[in-house]
Image (cartoon, rainbow, N blue to C red):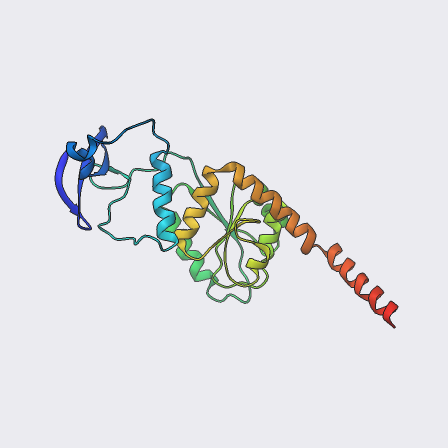
Length: 242
């Protein structure tokens, strides 16, 4: 146990809960005068839930993210945040486009960055690879569309049709497809995207519900049969009025 450290004007205590793992707690929790009048019961929330709440408050702007701000977290003895035990992996798949002159340069950067992480797989697909894309989408737990700019974003519709939960940027026509917290999750930053992915992986029942509702949204709004139905309804209305 080590006392005396100050973070954002607060005194904190490092408590070693197991060899090599230290939990950070506010010093007032070790003050007998403060704690003597407290009635303690069974814990109602986990440390993981508190960490998620802390990130959510930062994301929503209700709490500032300061380099010295203390939070409920776990650190190794050298100060590094302990790894999340949840298994995870990322497949980044895509192909080149004639209207993307910077694509080759960016792809090289992605390959270089991914080399140091065995959990990231980068797949360079040909321009026409429907079977491979279909297989990847159907095998995915969460589909991510982190576009900086976007037109309609057909890849989003493809994933929604397969009942997959989608985390996507709120750009272009993606918000027409992704109704936030109803047919998927929208993000506005890298940190927000990471939080949404973690949330879905930790709440598979919510992920499944978003997938079902996303599938229904595509079925009711974006299939060619629905477009045909609307055109026929329009023609019938115009013919009756004439």
